[in-house]
Structures are given as structure tokens and as C-alpha cells.
Image (cartoon, rainbow, N blue to C red):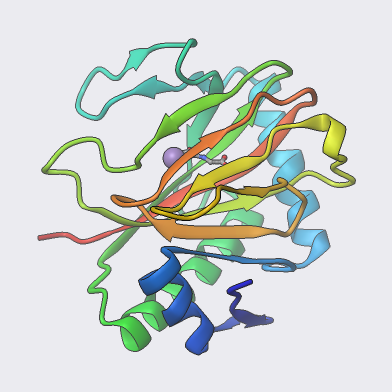
Length: 207
Ligand code: OGA
Ligand code: MN
């Protein structure tokens, strides 16, 4: 399985990441963040839901994404720097990863956008690409999972559909990161039986 090694604050993608992203179009990594940071982020995500700050996620880009629960049923809140020390640690990790991807893969990634996502029991996200329109600059998608003790019967896997290959299911276990090419890799979130927490993010090209 393609993987990158992620040692503390330093992301070090090796040849397997180049292979994964360029050839398979995806990679995954366990222990991408330490358990204590995952627990802080999970608590913050749940608190945000309790405070009413998580909104039903829309479909499509632009000013008025449409709520379409038959396509996606998650609630989201966009992350900003400075909202909490846990989020800032996470965003610093992602900045290191952005620089490393640019150095190793010449991807020209300029920015990162991300949001908490909470899928309540029964929620799912039908098969889609992460680049909705021609003017969307999303290039690499990264999802970090925040759920301890995830069991197969909880469902809720990220199902990747690589071109010409068998599909791959990734369970949303705490500390696990999945990364894939936004415009190319068809993927979906299978219906979850349990509350499912994550941070979904996208490295973008500006121009
Ligand atoms: C998304 C998405 C996958 C996941 O938010 O666009 O595909 O596993 N998320 O949460
Ligand atoms: Mn997606």
C-alpha cells in the first residue's frame, strides 16, 4: 500500500508517495497526527456541532451550494488559523506537507482550505470528484479521520474508485490520513452507522 512517513512535525514523502499520487492517484497514512491531537480535534468538532456552528454541507461551488441530502449528508465548519491551538497545529502540519509535495512532486500547490466534517448516523456522500467546475483549482484532497475504535460494522468507509482497478475502502480510524488527486479520483463515503468525524481539506493552485 502506498504510504508516506510522517515523523513528528516533518512530512517526508518518499518514492511511494510519488508512485501513489502519480500512478495510483492516492495514498494513505496511519498515525499522521498523534492520538492526543486527534482527540482534541474530535472534541472541538463535536463542540462546534453542539454550538450550532456546523452547517449542512452543500453540493457544488460558488455562492449558493445546494443542500442535497440525497447526495451528501455531512455537516461542516470551515477552519481558520487562530481558532484553536489544536487546529493551528493541524494547519502547520498541512503547511509542511504542502511544501514537501511541491518540492518532491512539483505540484505548484499555493493554498490549503479545510473544514471539519461530521456525518451523523445514516449519512453518506455519493460518488463524486472534488473538482466541481473548470475554474476550481483543487488539486490534492486530504482527509484526516478523528474516530477512535472504528469497527467494520460501523460502515462509513471512504471508498476510492481508481481508474481501471478494484475499489479500495479506507475506514475512518483516528489518526489516519487519505490523500488523492482531486480532479481524477472518484470516491464516496459509505453510509455510516456511527457519528463520523474528520477534517477534509484541499491543496489548491492559485492560477
Ligand atoms: C469530501 C469527501 C471523504 C471522507 O468531503 O469531499 O469526499 O472520507 N470526504 O470524508
Ligand atoms: Mn470528496
